[in-house]
Image: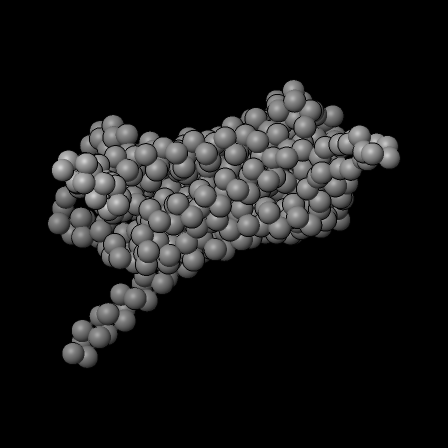
Length: 442
């Protein structure tokens, strides 16, 4: 018994090491991935960019980090996270350092593409961490790993002060150095996951890429991707956009805007672990209902533009204004971020359950589509500002998006329930009506 206990303790220790290292590495990567949420504001001023151009610059790293998630997830399944994770961090560090040499808008966009490699670390971590835990604990483990999203808040808290004191170039240099240090720590202390070690001992070859891509033919995978497009893509988009929103709408300086942007990013990151626990306990489907229902309410309220009204009263015109004030806005974005964090964990609870042998490829494509939301939405926010001229138009777009996701999920679930339990589709009369029918028959 003592030997069995010691083996169990050693296995638990290895699990904890893998989870802590992966979560820390993802935090550093996410801080770099969202670096333009702060330094982009200064670059916008220096280059005289409009909102659409700023949205493109802020979203460009998100594009790269999204597109490479699929291949990085597959590579992690094939070669292991211990190797792939440090390679991703070093590549992103080089690109972040080269960013400091850009001197024109096109060059900034090119450098931003390289910075985006950091975002691909999510697919690596999902595939790596999931291999260490049984299904009944994967929701919690992946939720804890997803807390690395808090890297966006780290950037918002720290980067404004570094930028004001030393300039945006220093921010990029320090963030690049942090990536290199973390890559070295991960390579030294991390171990190959049990699945990879078992496969190598048995002499089995990795699953071919073509076979790993087979689940992508299923509509279910793309439905999960839409969910993640909102709960993660919109989170990243708002993490990038909110400092600019606070400056433009409420007239705050960059330090205060960064701190308040972090007030949104922190709950949208930290509570992801709680979302994993809830998904394990109550089921991912129920957590998704909570997420989408609350998000519909929040985005609807945030969508309402500041409006002046004049009512022709008995004794003359009565003027009043309806607008989301500074405090209510901050509270609503906090609540929105909280429920998004639950949803992010719930989406990834589904994947190891439905596709246990294809976590890398399925998790990669879901992460890819979700990440694309972080690229497309900031550009859409900027374009809507330029075209519509209303600051709250970004939340109007998010309201439409989450309403579509909630509707698709609900009707899909109802269809599945009727298919599995045909009696649910049978006519249901109230007992009183049944009695009246019987009386009528006589």
